[in-house]
Image (cartoon, rainbow, N blue to C red):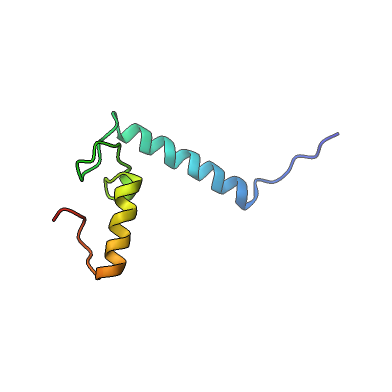
Length: 72
């Protein structure tokens, strides 16, 4: 016979992440392209850039001390 386990912190985190992802999906009705114009799809968590452009942006930001997105 199985005992019913409590939700615990991990269960709460999983439910929160699922709800957060569902809300994010509902907010974006269609895929958006990267703001740099590279042609790849963007991610709202990456300031509207694709993963590669965001990685380059972070690298330039760390090297130059600049905070503005690439192309400005």
